[in-house]
Image: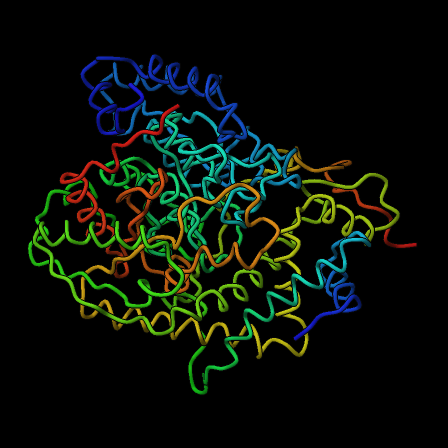
Length: 482
Length: 95
């Protein structure tokens, strides 16, 4: 049962092979048995999950089932969930029982999905290893000494470890694609504005985007069908019709033009990753695609621009955590300033404090033009690189990450080394275009991710290409030994 | 760009963050490293390039000014650290 995809589980529910209650109970039992080693969940919502499953079975019996009704999934603990602790991986929100639902959660509830619980993550989504979580790191199911990636590390570990058939994630600089690559699953960062950010705790508002993480492209399509759409409660949500992403999965790739940016195949990359990615691209050629070299000349500026823009927005977003209305408040504050400083000093972990300080500095008097404005100008150069390239080709491909999963503790004392792991994912958030990571091989027993990048609102094309690749290969079917 | 102890203390105050005395040196080093990393941007000529704040260059959407949600004060205050008579309690700010 745990090897079945969402699509296969949906068939099993529809045919009456098993009920949602049976399915949900199996997953809850498996989480209990296996998550001690992985630490992929922060909160397991057993009672609510079984109640949702029972309601889903009744809805099906009444002939009112949606394609997603009764399917159990997990949610990154960044999505506010009414009546459930929503911690964002932080001590600051360890006591926060959300009084409302994120739109993404509402959408899954409306479809009749079952939520197994909330997954582990880097604190406030700031990290690439899941090691900044207040609840301890999640671990990589392929090797428990390695990180699952981050920030959606718990979601990736839960799906790869077969503790949930699928999970939601969010991606600000690679936080869906990088953990998907490191854990050998399929993840999609949609176009900025495609999925509502309402109730998704903000890190860097102009970059954050929620998306699906699952084993297959088909499952990603099923999830995106539920997640995507205009939301009047999110002022950056785009009012554009949502297609049924499952309908175009079987289109032919004949004539698909693939661009390979030379900047993604040079520099410090694990040679095994380059080899696996090149072999995946040959597979796409066999499926009828053509390949040409392209250039994204400003790639090297993406990390510098990101590490001004994201901390600047974070320093503003996280100013709301002041110990007044929700979240951690220090004991016996001497006065208001003492309350702010100690509540924030105690509530936030090291990496979060570091980024708040970088952002505060960049936005402080006299530095705005040199840092923030400069970074926004570089951001446009990076976007233009992608716009120019995607005028020539349909999809850009390359490695998702320069290295496979690294050991816990290996990079945690060197922030810059950690930042460099996002070199191939971060520029896409600055540009706002959609991207995916799909499994395409292994290096030393650890998964390798192939990144697919498309133009604005080209999610259908990415999912179609990924699905066709997965029909011809079985990398996505590999299971870690447990 | 190199930050020292005084810079870190000033930034931490602006951000209203309490930083432990023994951590200040490490923050100074980390922040200096990060600023060195982002300084690569300064080598690029960006004269006449329009700053990009939003991928779609979207503008703020407006709506009709009408009440769409009822008062949820009690529900929203269930997560507050200290509340009295519907008000958030904080340390005394006016003598």
